[in-house]
Image 1 (cartoon, one colour):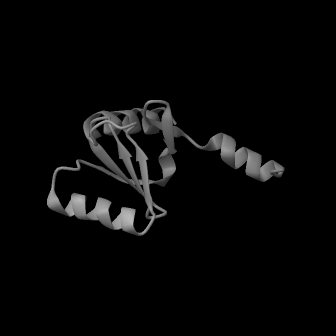
Image 2: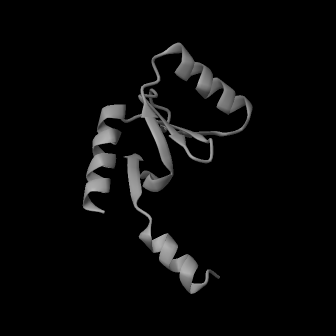
Length: 94
């Protein structure tokens, strides 16, 4: 059971909606990028090989790649621009 400090920390975290009911902790996002370039495809493949890939696309086409501070890679079916706007709005209201 989390202590008082841990509960406050969990409550203070802002969750970023990445589509289809999936969220990530906004403070841990390092980058939101488009998956179209060869380096981003390599990044995704390396993360998959190293078991650091989280696929949140629900079987749809990957439209954005989210890099987390834990070095995990999160795939989303929502456009990178849309997630970036959500991130900016979330940070502006915090």
